[in-house]
Length: 449
Ligand code: ADP
Image (cartoon, rainbow, N blue to C red; front, side, top):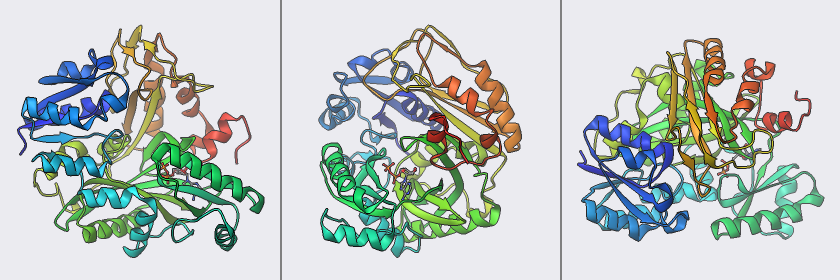
């Protein structure tokens, strides 16, 4: 096992990793920018190192500064969390070159899944169903039009290096294709430094359903069921739940086993998520994330497995915590991502938290790094915290979420709590009857069907 882990992240995920380390008896090193000197992860870690000024590129993305922090503190492994360097294959290789463990998959798998065109080809080869689309990158000339016509409109132009919904444009008709191709390529070029784009059938009312996997790197892999992340705004998840209101045990086992088998063949190591769109009973692979995800607590609540702890154990050479047969899905869980944003305009609302009262009680979990008097800096994402609720049934879970949301107080800044209080009372949400465009239509005040 590792002796000392450096946590190359901030906010709630840094705290989440710290908790797992403490339970494993591993020493912790927090790193922080000058803007985060008062952050909770810094206070709770055994040691801390300032790695630079506020902008992420100068601090949390600053590889030389992170290496120096490992050297100074004698850390033997680095946990990247999510975002920042978590899916940077080069970072994993650099760490290895310095005899440091990267707590994540092999660099080759990060690279493979980071290129969405290659990822899709690999998925197809491994027997995972994919969205119909171009076989590779397309260029904005005749070949793109011919391919789009073959797929059938509407089509979605997606960036090969995509992430966070950037570099994605819909072309509803032939007349829209040219513009969609150039805007997506330009956006991809400026966001990822890679202008390659590809085409996919644009699904009209799918759900976003993802499978959590755990691999031991030696050909063993299990799946831990699904999370339904269909409630999204601008392709960003807002509310996640598990199990999905539309999957039964047989459907779960079928897709779960397909994914687990693929991971066994890849000899995948650590935690990973294989994301699908789901429409009319069919699954379509869109991408794989080779890291711990924001919404991982949903799976923890319904399986009882500590994913971050297992991720660390497996990175240190440990075995899978259990066999597939021993994985039991218990009850229902919902996570709300509470952001420091205006609940209507979604404008970021950084600033000082004057009053803070997190809800509690049976089946209620808060993953957050804020406290009363904490100042949310304007430089990073706007997550205040994740409210995660568990119940024996979906109905119990919804009632518990309703009361937990009503109890929660975050004053001094604007948050998206009012949006969640409204959503938990919406008939379509209560019925579990929503798809990936539902929330945007709801926010636009349109009638949804
Ligand atoms: P990113 O890496 O940018 O997050 P994804 O491929 O994971 O991109 O897609 C993010 C979201 O975009 C999905 O959850 C879904 O809402 C939407 N999306 C992606 N592909 C399609 C598609 N073919 N049809 C309709 N919506 C899609």
